[in-house]
Image (tube, rainbow, N blue to C red; front, side):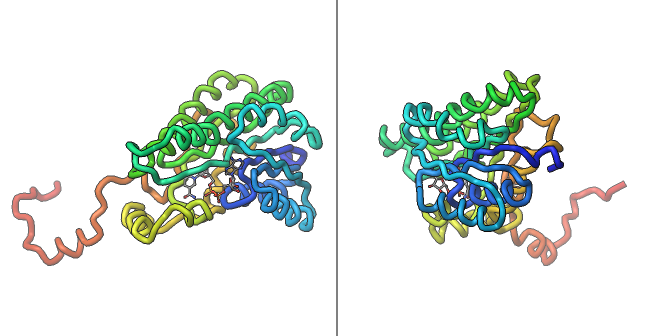
Length: 275
Ligand SMILES: NC(=O)c1ccc[n+]([C@@H]2O[C@H](COP(=O)([O-])OP(=O)(O)OC[C@H]3O[C@@H](n4cnc5c(N)ncnc54)[C@H](O)[C@@H]3O)[C@@H](O)[C@H]2O)c1
């Protein structure tokens, strides 16, 4: 980020934990933004704000449940009164649960859509008039590789993240000539409380095999991509989805012992010599 971001106002949802916390802390302490730390969990949001303030940054707690769209829309003007409307919006909060597609309840479906799709839409609608007036804005929506690739138990979650990716492009093209960019990121597996609640040992082992880097990402590695897209440097990137996934979406079949096996096998006589 450049010096232009020094006086920016940022709003980060789900900033009480995991990726959102990391982004909020970096925006406030590394990039000197004034940051709204929005979360439904008042205690964790307050702890993040205390940490930022103690380190010399500026941040404000915003407690709201993103599952309640009408309440969110009503609360936003007062929630963002202290620093003004945000120049940088990071729609990071998301909920996930592993539920078989045929067993997904209407309640689970609606809550997942409300938090992962409807709330980002309402927040973008809230932030965009200010961004348009300012002639500058950055929106980063935190989707998932589950929005790009189907996965077991991911029907509601994956569908919501695919919708978020599509909505990112829809908003991006309408606001492209306002100086506002709208992008998404699609993290692979990241070691955060969300994952600790959802990934069993077997799931961890499966991801270990399927991710070419054979490891989970860290919250900071995901935050680094978000911070780039929220910066002046990313001024000509809009409507895109950046996978930050250790190579997961680039990969097809990964055979860990392929080269061990071929080295002991007889040479493949039918392969023509390279010219
Ligand atoms: N961790 C991963 O492996 C991973 C992978 C792909 C995508 N993601 C996405 O990254 C984002 C952040 O995930 P994380 O792993 O840091 O999660 P996390 O569970 O550590 O943090 C999520 C935060 O969002 C808050 N939140 C949840 N529901 C809310 C609501 N209704 N209203 C307000 N706040 C709410 C929680 O209180 C929590 O503080 C999510 O959108 C998630 O889908 C995570």
